[in-house]
Image (cartoon, rainbow, N blue to C red; front, side, top):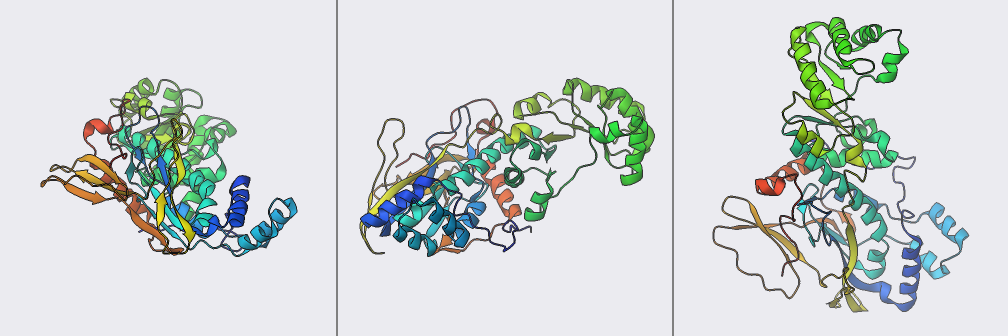
Length: 447
């Protein structure tokens, strides 16, 4: 079972405290002055709606978010920067010097599905502690959930064929590592990113590139060098010059035991059909065909009848065109009117047009029918009275503890998150997994 560890650094625990917005710390400063910073409060992360046409979202980044909260501490380098900027009071700086999150984080599993108003993360802490976590939590969860939702659709379009994550050169270097993890959670088989392989135990793969072929006097010479380095069971990039000639050169170099060819240009469907026919003619029926080239789930679906064995996916997985924002927001939903752990909290809610939400801490469950398909996402506030569940239906709890009193209580496993995603996705009816635009399969705005 593969496990997750924090990114390496000189001291092993790099601070995340300045991965935030200026106004969060000035807001904390004002809250300390008024006293409300010490009142118990509840914040929730949810999406008011999914990106247009999406039928479900996928939670990812939860374990990364937990780790970031643990590392949200102001050591001397962070405090020195804040003192130099001189926008906080001495009292606020003293407070930050002693800052340790000692509240609770409760949320959905990594790999779980979510819908409008699903409370995917709940923060129970003092107002001051919860307030300053907004940016770091949304930064992680919005990115990773967007990648996971796009990746889940691509895995569905692949329909059992191998999926390779290769988006590193299309995004920020650290975002690339997080993207590889999110893709793995939703079922990608392998990544090209070595740092993701080191941190998360994800299998990595790759052979050579166009530059390698161009560096040799001839394509045939390049392929012979590749065989000398890796043996015949490797993948040959055959579209540097002419695809058909590239296939002939690859088979000549590797023989009938050639592993795979990759096509990165042209009409991929037509090229794959022609490649399959030529490979068979050359006595290499076991050679697999890999395609790449800014593919999204719709382009993959169009290749469903083509003889494609593997998809290399990058640009449309890690960029906004394929992975639109998850549109998660972080809102205060309850607060006590006086300090102290036992003080009761009153529900609070934003009511402005188009941006409102319900107050009060929520409990979320998913109701499954007798066939095991999801029929309802129940999101109940403290005063809601749920309707009884039908005798042949099952109600599954969605929230689990991640941090309790500031301490992690749930180990993260990439394999377990991926298995949970498969289970959750299987609870959707086939029409709700369709790639065509549609309404969300469920809604979390229950009560």
